[in-house]
Figure (cartoon, helix red, strand yellow):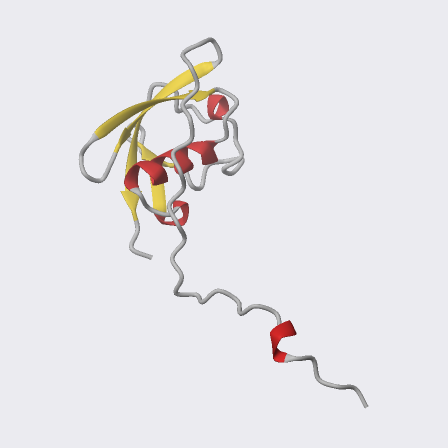
Length: 116
């Protein structure tokens, strides 16, 4: 017969669904040089923050920066352009779309945070 494995060899418990996703760290801003673009964020607090990105950065990088600025998990942050109003989470090409192709250079991006 096979002996049962000792309890200490059991796999660690999976994290509970109640564990909150941590907010990301604020990535370093690229230096002002050719190949960068600027985006202004309007945070839920009303604060405005201008930020440089590489043109080749993905749209996802904007979500990471916005989440870090709000101290919220990326999964709870939504971004949209002001005019024309356009949700960026559902952008054609997905979140890996390069920012230069997403038509966000010089835009005011509104940051909203969902409860769940």
